[in-house]
Image (cartoon, rainbow, N blue to C red; front, side):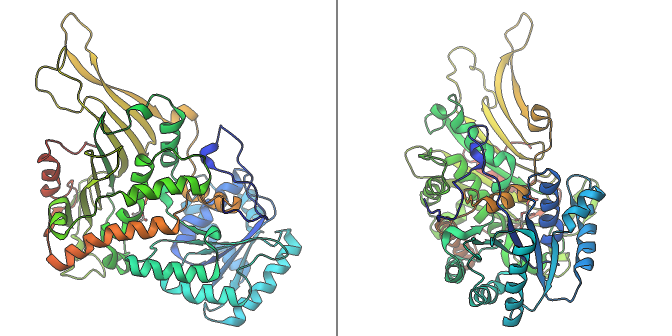
Length: 515
Ligand code: BG6
């Protein structure tokens, strides 16, 4: 296990209820990109919420590092406004005041060596004043082209090491590269300053409550694992649907598209959790060793196979909840002839003993009629000896893992309709987080920030996972660019994507599950 001696024993959210989780350690969190959207919408609300839930160590400091001149007070006021707007629980005045006292602003250009020297002095001072123990957690909430300069300066200022026996870690936001060579280059840049064990690559889907629950469902219960294989499972579907469009992010999205934005990271991570073998223990590397094997076992498409197994689409004008919305190409800052895909559907194969012959269908899209992320495991049909003689839809037994919204799990099965005749109808056993546990799930960023403060990297992507995922995705990108096949289909905003995506399943005698 890659734990340096000054780190706490491995703690893991997946162990909750099995063993206690170690407490996040006192530290200073230094956010690069402190005035940006991510800080406002996700990071500060997440930190406030964990503080409000009493889970933040009292000896904590947050330092915002950004270019614009600003006082601590101005920075705090700006963050308060953001927290009030985006926090999942209402912001209470006295709790905010208390939290805000631990927040500071540090003005510097990212390329100014002096700024990092001043930062080092300030962090030492905070260690003394606030008891942050010399521990530093750097959060790179900036565009990837800034990573190099920031990391080089952190290293030059000695900030890639903790102070006085403390630790130093770095959290890296996506996009982690745009293809395999750029991901490798980024990994090299990060590795130059921080060891892999101190590098936390965020994939916020892994912090979602139900995503974490997949392993508990599979390995804490005895009833699913014996059925979790090609003998009993017909196929698996993974859907991530959003009603939102590109939302002013064209600058990034135009160069990314749905495949790189969602499939390379979030959807493949979900697939890993569903498809992996049981790890030997819950240590970060044991879990990630098993996850990476799933990506490595993904069948690699030739250009011709991409044309048959991957469908891409782009939304045209349409209506969402009765409101007309523009086509992708008419969105702000989008090229009028853009070929960027806003929808992808794929038919994948995991080539190992457990999954051979079980198709995995994935789809992800913007401007679909409903927002929802779910995984559905479709079991094979019971033999038609007694009850299932007549032609009926094939999906008798489906286990649905709802990642969001309304997190939970449901199992569909056949039951006899009450009465004298022998009519059979599907029914559902349903578990909802909200009602079973009576409290809202924390936001993904809350869990992930706490884990990085505790030194637990289980829910973060490891270097080889990221690189393997790019290796798989690059083949699809290659086919798209080289052969321009399949074509980019249009779909009306508010529809479930191009018809070709329905055909992808129809030709196997299957259909997408209705969300
Ligand atoms: C982000 C993507 O990683 O995930 C966005 O860049 C997408 O395009 C978002 O909208 C979806 O995340 P969530 O948590 O809102 O489902």
